Length: 88
Image 1 (cartoon, rainbow, N blue to C red):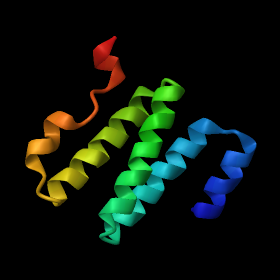
Image 2 (cartoon, rainbow, N blue to C red; image 1 turned 45 degrees about the vertical axis):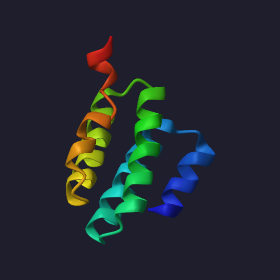
Image 3 (cartoon, one colour; image 1 turned 120 degrees about the vertical axis):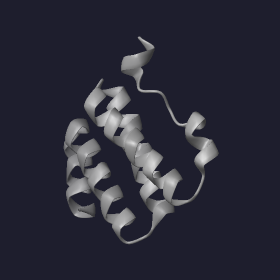
Image 4 (cartoon, rainbow, N blue to C red; image 1 turned 90 degrees about the vertical axis):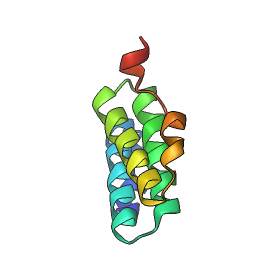
């Protein structure tokens, strides 16, 4: 997945780059590497907002919420980003 991500970055395909980052985050979560997963979801979220992809944005926020839940950081739910579709 990292090689695919690098190629997508070189091509400038931001949509597919966001998907790849989300997939990498899922793999890290499955491996129990929550810090790495969170970083990839944050990068994915940034791209999804940049390209106005509300579905990808919601998936990234959901992933961030899952990580907070796994870490027992229940009080941080209010600190998670609000999907831009709800802000408009």
